Length: 386
Image 1 (cartoon, one colour):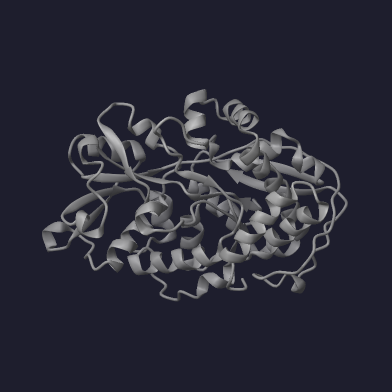
Image 2 (spheres, rainbow, N blue to C red; image 1 turned 120 degrees about the horizontal axis):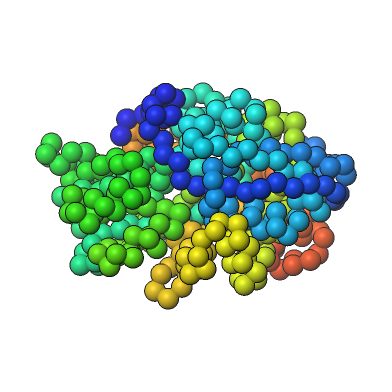
């Protein structure tokens, strides 16, 4: 696929994700500044005692923002001295991205592809945290679900994808690195990726035999297998051998520079919510179900997995800056970003806000083992000093 201009992005980009309500008020503590990753000492990490406001732009109701849902319902933002205000847009990324860029919103808590695309086109955005890691599933007809184990197995295949789904991009990159040629099969290439408008359209094309497989996310695999015709063949992280960044938390440069304290509070509350998600499944499922309006079986499957369904989404607040740098390079090599400067993304990544939030929670002492575990992961996933 060629690089998309902002106008093309707005016309093509599908909406898929998100949302949450709003809340307010109260105080917090300052965090420590030592870091293996970003140098937090170059910033003022004072966490203000007064209540601050942060504006989020959201896209409807989806469990992908589980940490935000839980933080709101548990009152964590209020306890940290943060007033969360939300604007929910109906036009998906084409409406959300301009709101982030022009400063009418401070945070967009999903979508790595849109932010990377806009950075490549000159927008001054900053990825400072995570929402979900992985999250993608490959759907095939049931009889073909065990056919894709190595790159050679993809030769001659037509693969459905949609622009805002990360799994197809990392798989395309992996296939290319294994020596396969990507492009129309009739032109002598090995694998063809076909852009479709939605997950539903992709799955329908698989069922009709028009394509061999497709990539979906946000737990859509649960719906895809209901007809009994399709199955989840694999998750891209299993195929490529490592996790990859899906939805990220992005802000604009103005908010990054002027609302640092509020952004740290935001991450503190989200990290507290992540601890609840990982340790209190019953309460978490109830909160997500109440928020999303989805049935209990579906919510459990996409959140934790159930029966033979493996949850593709992994909730993670870590910015994973090393992996984002690699993903940005993959987008360039795949032809999704025209600007060939692979180092450009490094100026638009920050792991220090997350690190200060994590240090603050470790200093507080509650659930210390949990947060120390996250610190270990942080040190492995943010080695570039960004």
